[in-house]
Length: 184
Ligand code: HEM
Image: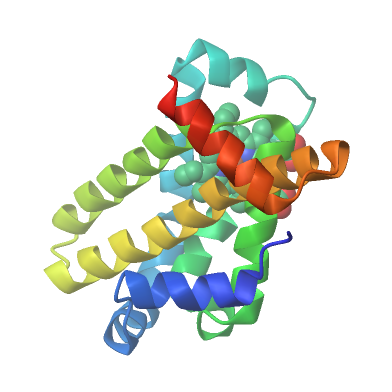
């Protein structure tokens, strides 16, 4: 039950109406994105560091914070370049980022507010730089697509693990979930 990251990217782009115009606006502002990326990373990790639970995760391994600052900066810039025009390479990269977070045990309760922080911080920057609404909208859309990848990774990894351990069919698993949800 592995996710088809390429199809998922296409579906998300369609579902959220991430258009060629959005892509063009992002690309046209890629240099600006690159310039502000390190500052966004600082802002982001300062935010994570203020939360005791997330701070513990960040500092659990030697050099993690340093690596993260670099990978986050790259991630941020890639939203503007689209890597391969927001194609398969972009999808593979976003899927991998999702899997990394699942592996470390960083859940939706961490990731969703964290993405809100990114959207908010970039919104402030856009205002300061007097950038237009279209760029803000395009950035919000791509942030949500990236968030969807991380969230979906949870579902996919959890389901795959349960199915593999138990030998249940997907149909049975879905029935058990809806029965469980109904009884909560
Ligand atoms: C907007 C949400 C987030 C984005 C865009 C993001 C971005 C990234 C990226 C690009 C990587 C590198 C993945 C790789 O190695 O391939 C990463 C890894 C990681 N992220 Fe996040 N992240 C987010 C949320 C969080 C949150 C909420 C935490 C909580 C502490 C967190 C902690 C980590 C950790 C510990 C790693 C692995 C670092 C390592 O040891 O190499 N991230 N993240």
